[in-house]
Image (cartoon, rainbow, N blue to C red; front, side, top):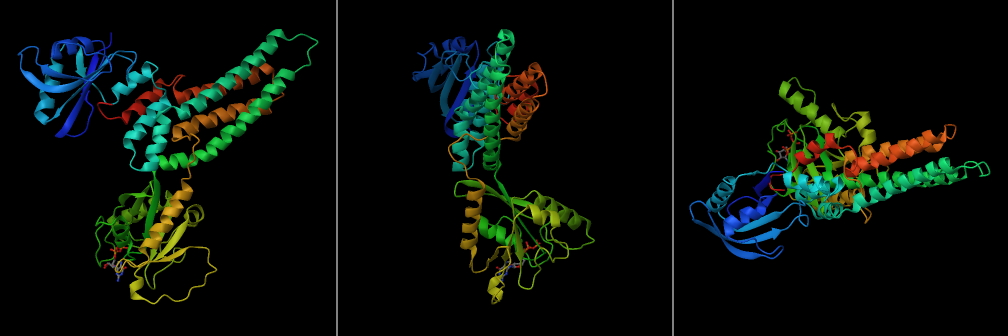
Amino acid sequence: MSDTIYALSSGALPAGVAVIRMSGPAVELVLNRLCGVVPEPRKAALKRLVDPVSGDVLDEALVLYFKGPASFTGEDVAELQCHGGRAVVARILDVLSEFEGLRPAEAGEFTRRAFDRGRMDLTEVEGLSDLIAAETEAQRKQAFRQMGGGLGRLYEDWRKRLIHMRAMIEADFDFADEEDVPGSVADQVWDQAEGLIGEVDQHLEQSKSGERLRSGLQVVLMGAPNAGKSSLLNAIAGRDVAIVTEEAGTTRDAIEVHLDLGGYPVTLVDTAGLRETEGRVEQEGIRRAQARGEAADLILWAMEPGGLAPDHSVSGLSADVRQSVPVWIVRTKVDLETLPERDSSGTTLEIPVSCLDKNGLEALIDRLSGFVGEMISVGEAPLATRARHRHFLRDCRAALHHGFTRDDLPGELRAEDLRSAADALGRITGRIDVEDLLDVIFRDFCIGK
Ligand SMILES: Nc1nc2c(ncn2[C@@H]2O[C@H](COP(=O)(O)OP(=O)(O)OP(=O)(O)O)[C@@H](O)[C@H]2O)c(=O)[nH]1
């Protein structure tokens, strides 16, 4: 019999209300001892909680009981909605710890029990984790949809189709008689498999947006020392995040701010100015700046009047980065100069900005929002949101493609490819052989969830 677990499931104390949650076989006994009765399932009951040993009244709380399996974990679950004072919560947790068979829950343990009892598949578990971590509206929507099973249903539908295809081929082996047109069932099946390859490809392509939305876009400020990068970061963030001085080489380590641009998450990164230097700390800062630039979704290259463009700077961007990452030139400190007419034939976008009088700032933020909206265009279709999903989708596609193209192989071997493709999808939803993945997935959860 499993332990009964308990934890404070609500946030930091003190708070108006705190929610203490319990799950496991001893829940009914605990409720009987604490409040003298097990309330009717799913009906809130206002009860005095009493320490069964001393008879002290601990608090007056709303008690909710969910009889398993109709509960979040599938076990008997109770929620004590008590006053959110530190001493109140500490005393109730203390009293719970005295019950035999009760112990504090580990991080993510309630959800892990829900998964183990088949209440949620792995994509739903991940959706729940993302929902708790969501910082912007678009992230919230995506996570909520995934938690509701949208993604899991898509993969389950594909998996069932694959199982059906394999069954058709196997039935064909078993009942083949010599008058049948050879290969006709198999041909139909492999036509369907080809269709599924197309669906997987399309899903993988669209899912780039899903992953970007989950993790946020990286916009990295780069340029020569003193070009005005930190000032720009502060101006866009609307607060003093990075230190600004007249001294070149002020910023050493990368500094991040999280922005919500029209509901989409963006991490804006300030980096050390790029130049040749002997200073070991500054060299390390520049190495980190280059690394952030390589991983960026967009580089904003700050260039002060008379400054150097990325291609001409002493320690500018490598050709590789220039090719793979879009770069916008932000002409900083434009309050100091009259902008010369520039040749508009260049392909790099140039945006004039002054952090002193805020000219051009709004236009820059608007352009950024537009860019982010284009990079993360999510529609209503469920999207893969993790590298883990992509990995197994590629395995699925590879197996299907192998079976589809190798018509020189015996039918049994090709049918095996259908099984491998279905198994790869089963690993995404957790129906198949995922023990090794569980610790990684549940590691991100907080206690009480
Ligand atoms: N006039 C004017 N001065 C600015 C503007 N933006 C920044 N500065 C000044 O330029 C200097 C350098 O600004 P920073 O924002 O620290 O530049 P940085 O590129 O982060 O510098 P490093 O950290 O050394 O790489 C400071 O003295 C700022 O006050 C601007 O829009 N107009």
